[in-house]
Image (cartoon, rainbow, N blue to C red; front, side, top):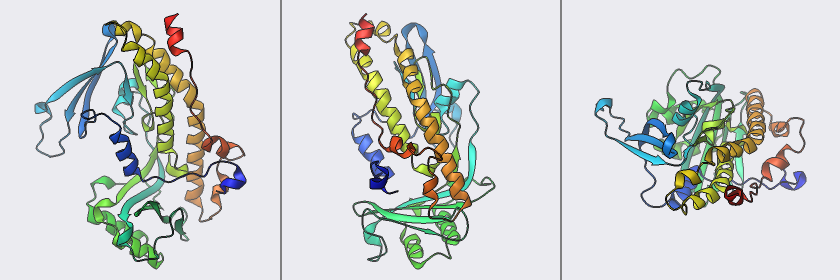
Amino acid sequence: INAKASGHPSPQYLVWYLLQKYLAEEVPSGVLQLATTVESISVKQEENLVLVTTSKRDDSASMNRNTKETITISGRVLIGCDGINSIVRKYLLEGQDPELQYHSKMMFRAVLPLDSLPEGVCPPAGTSIGYKGQEPGKLFAFRETAKDIVTITAMARFDDQPIYAAANRCATARKQHLKELFSGYPKNVQIMIDATPDSSILENGVYSIPVVNEWSKGNVVLVGDAAHAMTPGLGQGANQGLEDAIELANQLAPLLVAAADCDGNRSKCTAELPRILKDFWKERIERVKQVHQASASRTAVVNQTTSKDSKSDIGGNDPDFLTRLYNWKPTQHDGIIDSMAT
């Protein structure tokens, strides 16, 4: 994409695990709980509270579900940002959970240190190299995404849904599978795969869900992949989730700050929460649907071609799509507290 010619900002790469690290560092100590499974969700209507019962996840075969130790936490709002297999979404939609849609593709992603590669294999920072073969939809790409950190993105067509759980492959088997798929590719690809630690390779099928029609019920709301998991065709999955988070925070913050000063009557102060949550996703849903559709279309095009010019199809017949996509700015919301006071 030529940023200058198209008049929109140039997209920037960020290593996903560094993004997670940066976000986690902003969370107060003790708040983030890892390896935790949601067991149940309920609502105390009279107190305007959402209750979530959780347990510590233990993947060992000996774990007895009946002996799990659980804790119940409460809050004014439950934000379901728990991904494509969202438990919160299952609660919210009451058995009408959408089916996952498979897009005939397997993805491989990996991270490795730059100093593990011979000089000259990785392109200069700010540049990405991608190799496409004669098989439609097949790609091996890599770049220095952050200082001294190289990331790999590879993909290959698999028309039938995977008959195995890719996540259950051992690390060595995942690497061997990657080597076999790209065995005929240039020497630099082989060097890159050989240098990649087995444990850093992630392999999974490309799935999406249709954009959920309603993202909230009461004081429970969905954001990100839980509401609109999309293909990686435009690299917009995480971006749209971050946009959701910013817009939701902008709408919630004034209300929650006001509730903290409500002299013990917080349930009355938070009575507007369901409306605010609905306003949030109603403002987001049309943009998300456009990006979701464009991403799925892009994935379908890439699946059928080896052409390096397929990016010209982004946005279809809408010449302003990329400008709107990359020039997004948060919505300004004024008067939330004032309207509550009146």
